[in-house]
Each structure stands twice: as structure tokens, then as C-alpha cells.
Amino acid sequence: METNHNYVMIAMQLLGSLGLLIYGMRMMSEALQKMAGPGLRHILAKMTTNRITGMLTGTLVTCAVQSSSATTVMTVSFVSAGLLTLAQAISVIMGANIGTTLTAWIMSLGYSVDLTNVVYPAFFLGMLLIYKKRHRYVGDFLFGTAFMFLSLVMLSASGKAMDLEHNEAVISFFGSFNTESHLTIIAFLAIGTLITCIVQSSAAVMAITILLCSTGVLPIYLGIALVMGENIGTTATANLVALGANTQARRAALAHLLFNVFGVIWVLIVFYPFVSMVCHLVGYDPEAGGQAKLLPVVLAMFHTCFNVINTAILIGFIPQIERAVCWLLPEKEHEKKAAFRLQYIQSNLVQTPEISVLQAQKETAAFAQRIGEMFGMVRQLFIESDEHLLKAQPDVKPMDSNERFSQIENEEDTTDKIEIEIARYLEQVSDDHLSDETKQKIRQMMREISELESIGDACYKLARTMQRKQEASKQFTEHQNEQLLAMMKLCDEALVQMCTVMRGHRSDHNIGETFRIENDINQLRYRLKNENAESVNEHEYDYAIGTLYIDLVNELERLGDYVVNVVEARFGK
Image (cartoon, rainbow, N blue to C red):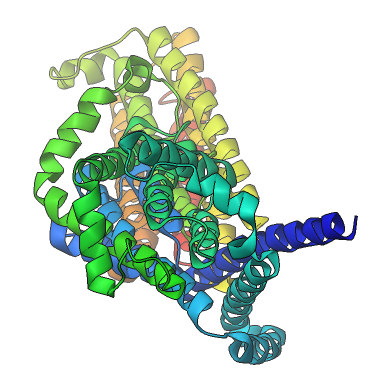
């Protein structure tokens, strides 16, 4: 009874250690990403000019954040947001596979060196830094690192407590497998894949494998088979994340899977010679037995050789991999024809707040572009509503005014939906732990989308006023048409300038140009109101047409104010 109780306690300690390992690595990874902030996304977006720099970037970022899954998910998010091409993403993913080998070496170190003396000072120092708001992310990183090392110490202790090397039943079980059979290797490869897919942590599977091998009960061939399975299983995270994303994101995730599957296939073909080569590099003889302490190093070395050689083979075939995933995942028809679909935000993508904010910025810039196009429809409606204006512009292809108004009405409804979707996404992001800079960006974007939606409302009101004029069979004078077109031209300039500011970095632009255009709009509105009052008094046209005219002038001026508000929000004013 006592023995059973001991086994239950050891099993609980083992599971708890694995949970602590996963939590520690996640905490460390998130802290590093927050410490890097916008710098991390700029590195990924800019340092991928060719396949070599892309691969090196993926390697360095993964070594930094200690999670190939985090790098891969970021890469998939960037592809979804249009910041990386598919070819660039594939090179980054290849580098991420190399970067993740550092984790295996840390694991092997944890089983070879007593890390207890490092863990507790790290906890103490991390606690002090967390209470200092300025350095809280450094404290989180130290806490995550301490948890990870503590879990390795606990796993090593659990392995010793289980005393598996003297457990005849366990030894007999693993000894019953024929390590010289490819079927056995494939079976353990499948087991490694399945376990990694379930626990969603290749580090946890690597820790279990090292634990079993270091006790000497799991033959090195079977341990390596589990590591190969872990390489395939770790691709599940990115593929799950990309399930509801756009086609390009799913292609990037699929490329990750194909990369690792190809590697596993060629290693299986040369399995025994390849393992012998790795063992020789470490100085371990798989036939001699003993030397169990070297087995964690053998596993780490295999993991490194596998990913480095696989990348060296495939890095020259990135265009072919790109064509293969495009053929396997063709773009769906509904994605080509969808009337309303956010371009960059994929609400189901799990990523860091920094990347989420970047995607929202791209979506907001696309929203601004759409608003500019909507105003273009309003100008078209104005021209189409007057025969003299149509004759003066023979290049304009007229549309039925009711059809054009319906088009603008539908667009206004779409802008309402876009505002709600972006706002909902930003609310989800704001629930996370954010840096002060990220919080400020979210507040700015909330204001931007609200003002952009107001511009959409102004466009709809302009169109509705034009429809009222049409229904009343009223016509503006030639002078009124000229002045309204002049004012629309100024509004169009303001919208073009706004879209330019929204797409670029604010340090590259000057807010003064927007203020200049707005001042011109205000002065023109003031002059036109005075002229209108005089013209009505002198009976140049009746009061009703004058009212419709001034309604359009006032709405155009309000539209200009909304544009200024958007630009000010972008500049943080």
C-alpha cells in the first residue's frame, strides 16, 4: 500500500514539474516579447530581405524567446497581416527550427548540472524587479527562467525517486521493443507526435524523453524517435492557430509541417547511420550500454543536427515549397469575392499584444482607405445628379442615381461593422498585460476608428442630401456646382493626406499639411455661407435650393473636421 502511495506522489510530482516547465517557458517567452516590444516585430518584418537573413532572424528570435511555437505563430500572424511574404515566412520558420535546439541543450544541462543554487536567487531578484514597475518585465523573465530551471531540478529528482533503472517491469517493457526495426521507430515517432499535439509543448515531451533516457530504461533509438515525433507535433500549434485565418496564413503553417515531415522522412531512410554519427560526435557508444549521463547530450545533439542539416537541404528549395503549399491550399472563391471581411485581423489568431496592435494598425489604415473610396462614390453621385456636370466630364461612366445611393448606403453599413469589429478586437487585446506604449496605441486607434466611422456617416448624409435634391427636381446653379466641386476637391486632398499618414510612420509626416487643408475648407465654407445668404436675398435662386446647398457645404466642412481628428489621433494629440 505504501509503495502504491509513493508511486502516486511521484507521478503527481512528475506531472506538476511538467506543468511548471510549460508555465515557466511561457512566462519567460512572453516577458521577452514584451521587453522587446515593437523592436521584435520590426526585426521580423525588416530583417528578412532574403532567405539567409530570414533564416538567421528566425533562429535569433527563437533563441531569444525560447519558443519556436511563439516565433512560428508570430510569423503566421505577419503573413496574415501582409507584413511578410510566404517565401520570407518559410525562411523564418526554418530558422525557428534551428533556434529551438537551444531549448534541448538547456534541458540536457538541467539533467547534468545542479541548478538549485541558481533558482532561488533568481526568484528573489525577480520578485524585487516585479515590484519596481519600470523593470517588471525583466522580473517576469527571471521568474519564468527560475520556474523552468526549478522544474528541471524537480524532474531530475522525480526520475531518481522512480528508480526506473531498477524497475524490472519498466526495463522489460522497453526492452521488449526491437530497436533494429523501422516499424518500432515509426511507432515511437507517432507516439511523440501525438503526445506533443496533446500537451502543445515540445519542451515537455523533450523533458520526458530526456528523463526516460537519462535513467537508462529507454534505448537511445527510441528516444530519438520520440524527438523526431516532437518535431512534427510542434507544428500543430501554428496549424491550429491558422485554421480560421486567411489562406496565406494557413499556407505558412502548412509549410512548417511539410518542412519537418520532409526532414523526418529522410532521417528515417538513413536512421541508423545518422544516429551512429551523432553518437560518435558526443562520444557515446549505443552498443556498449552504460554512460546514461551522456544520453541527454546525445538527444540535444541529434535535435541540433536534424534541424541544421534539414534547413541546409531545404533552404535552396523555398520557391518550390511555396508553390507546393499554394497548390495544396488554393485561395477560396469566397475569399476573393467577400463583400465584407477584415483584411488583417484574424480574431482567432493567438499572438502577443504587440503583434495584435500592429495588425489593428494595418486594419485601421485599410479602413481609412475604404473611407476615401466611399467619398469618391459621393463625388460620383454629385456629378451624376447634374446633366451639365456630366456633359463637362465625358470620361465619367454614369450610374443610375438610385443604384449609386444604394451603393453608398451599403458602404456606410459596412463601415459601421468594421468599426465594431476593430473595436471588439482592441478590447480583447486590452484585456492582456500591456506596456504603457501599447495601451496608448490602443487608445489612439479607438479614437481613430470612431472618427473614421463619423466620416462614413458624413458621406452618407451628403449622399442623402443629394438624393433629396434629385427627388425635389432641383438643380444647382453653375456657380454653386463649381464651389461644391472645389470644396469636395479640398476634402479629397485631406482624405488622401490622412490615408498617407495612416499607412506610414508618423515621424515621416507633418501634421501641418492637414491643418492647412482644413483651414482652406473652413475659409471656403465661411465665404460660401455669406455668398448664399446674399444670393437668396437677391432671388438668384430660391430658399429651398439654398438650404440644400448650405447643407452640403456644412457637411463637407464637418467631414474635414473629422479628418483632422483622425490625423491628430494618429499623432497622439
